[in-house]
Image 1 (cartoon, rainbow, N blue to C red):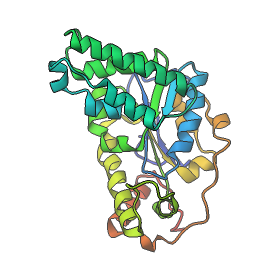
Image 2 (image 1 turned 180 degrees about the horizontal axis):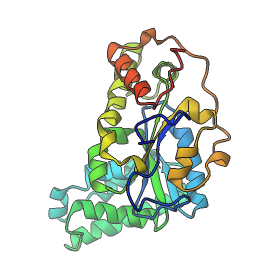
Image 3 (image 1 turned 30 degrees about the vertical axis):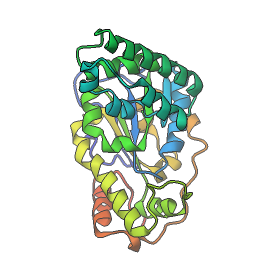
Image 4 (image 1 turned 180 degrees about the vertical axis):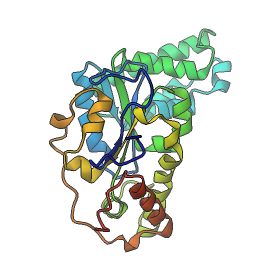
Length: 292
């Protein structure tokens, strides 16, 4: 299997594609994050909770909606570093306003506060790393520690090239759900999310755009460092590729996953969403649940 083909489990990826690739049961080092991405309402939050428990059991830290790299992307800039004025207050406020969760999240927030202040002080004294990218990596290392680490944040789909440049050794988990189910979930979501579409047309367009970001990016990452999961397959217990990537059997951590509801009408999908869905099916990432 090459990582771009379905292995018959509804899950692609995670096999070795280069000499010297990781042995089964490998524990990820602290510099090699696991980044979980997927369109909103695809089951990423539930999977993040499972990964948080699994990574904690390995002595590491995985956050759900930690979004620290996402915020550092915006506030740790070359211009501010040159001025000796990194914006720790802004990042801290964003993280505490809507706190992340996961195993050890409270302690994680405390480490974030300390690491941001340390980085800001280094910049003020002219002692920061030679590049902002290196300084961001240093902050993340101080926050997450030396063990395996990672984060889930849906908006990472909009920052894929930057994340790859900043963490070139990252391992990626892409989770997708049939768009008809995803769109139905988006439209039923609580109304205090101003960025959530209010009709099927807008929801279909958003799903297609976000999912297309992964399809454009995926070949940038070697097949052995990515897994692409169908939510329905994951609910059915098909998690071998994910277990291989994480370095531990994920079965016990996925027992709370719910099977998806009955299939929904796909006629609400825009032509672009239909095209993206067809590509996911062609690649073996998404099962053709509505076409059989």
